[in-house]
Amino acid sequence: MGLIVAKFGGTSIGNGKRIRKAAQSVVNEYMDGKKVVVVVSAINKTTDELVAIADESIGKEVTEKQLAEILSLGERTSIRVFSSVLESLGVKSEYIDPSHELWPVITDDNYGKAQIDFERTEEQAQGLLSLLEQGIIPVVCGFLGRTENGEVTTLGRGGSDVTAFLLGHCLKADNVIIVTDVDGVMSTDPRKIDEAEKLDYISVEEMRDLATHGAQVLHPHALRFKDPEIKAKIISFEKGDLSDPGTEIVGPFEDSMGKKVCLHHEPISVVAVVGEDLLNQIGLLAKMTSLVADANINIYGISAGQNSITLFLDKEEADDAYHLLHDLVIAEDNLSSISLGRDIAMLTMINPDFIETPGVITEITNPLKENHINIVEISSSQTAIVLFINWEDGKAAYDLIKEVL
Ligand code: ASP
Ligand code: MG
Image 1 (cartoon, rainbow, N blue to C red):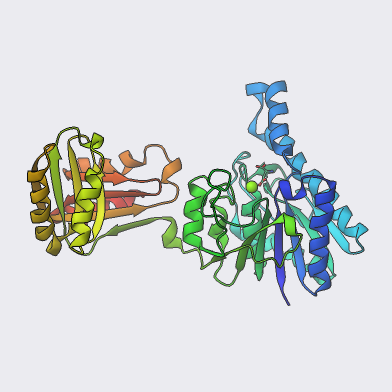
Image 2: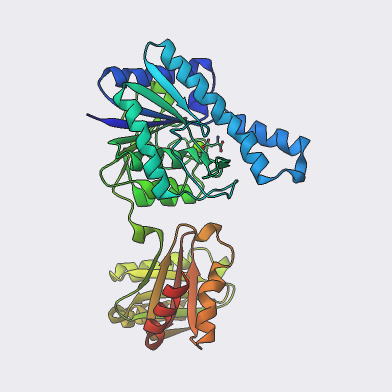
């Protein structure tokens, strides 16, 4: 028998009609023999409105604790409405807010962005199973938590996605369904490019990267709780049908995915071309990379600056690339010389939180500085930092970085 955790975002319950449609979709699954736990956000933009009211009326004086109480009214209202609509449709339901004895999500007292106490939450969440056994549909506030002392906390904006996956994990649900205002996950923002297409599947890893890069579909931390046995998907509220395929999020969340340092097993080589005004030369990068690509040589990374462009390549292939690119240096007016560094260690650090962590580069490079390890090149993207250092220093640097990350 299936257990579903269905989370409805603000737009999906944006007005009375939508709430009824959402509730009906839950009832349909229930009638089909499924057990459903409902998690809801605040209705429409309620949370934004509450933030604005607190800001205008109290201003900077507002404490995190007060704000958590105030914001919690969004979800505390929506569960009451949703649960009553379910009952009006002829099923039994109970709304669960932080004051309820069965309230599942237990956190620390960091009121605005509380950390979840997994053990306690797992324990508490079992209480919801007793409701399900009695044929009652629990409707739980997303986004909120409760301290051991009974104070209300929040998990941070957009946190009801976290609630859904967290409960899915604790209750060993078969499905976690995120009902939202898009058809699923798109290849890009459809408001920006008309040709955007819905994806049928997306891996947990890609989904997390997307979320970290600002796609609003899902909270970047929610997938931490996605177990391999849980089927998860993102669907549109428009269809009013929880069995809509939407976009399925496939694969488990692996711990190593969150944080990872890896030392490439072999030395790699760096080929650097030097010249003038390089970033203003249209097609220069394309010329360089296609020369290398035509020779079937893979590029691990590129870093480009006004006076040099560096390619990172396999050591065995670097000599070929070196020769090919040398011809280009001769042919191009703006390029003056080329060099080849042979034995370079490549250290890759992946962490979806890099983008929101100030000072992370310093944290990584400081221990290297203290140990007199020179960095040949560094390149970074939103979720990865790649360091190139001399091969002899590779293992030591790896150990140092492992310690700080
Ligand atoms: N209502 C909260 C917010 O707007 C939580 C959520 O919607 O996930 O941030
Ligand atoms: Mg959201």
